[in-house]
Image (cartoon, rainbow, N blue to C red):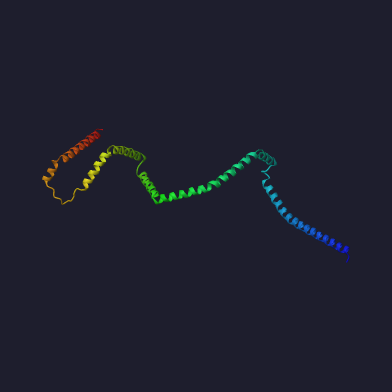
Length: 222
């Protein structure tokens, strides 16, 4: 076989391969057309159905007006997108801090619960409910005024000197023997009554009794 015949056969084989390639491509295009025609038909049906639903509410003028507004406010929309992006970045930065703060708050509440604070608050609420159920607002207001007066009086009487005296008196009273079978003679009582301490105490008691009597008399006159 001559070289010319070989060269001619090679060219024929090359052309055959090209024709087969083009044929395969055309076949693929035909298959794509068939598939796309099915999809396009369904999509077109959906579009027709959608347009039928919005036909009474949609006008081309509205679409044009909406498009104009969109174009006029392009800068505003871009600014809003920038702000949204900034907010998103801020949330990404704040989220770890918020998690740490929430964890600290949970730990604090757990500690408060262990300390019994919530039980105390619950008890206080129950007490307030009982007060509200048994007293009128006028009674509660009157009690509040009386408590204020008692606190003022207590502030006047509870001076450091008086508190020290009360502490000493309480300590000495604890040391007194209050046994019922203790023998007490009249002579011993009279002997104690002659002491200056007892006389001063009796004089103080009489002064207090006199003041109380005067106050009772004023209350009766009023």
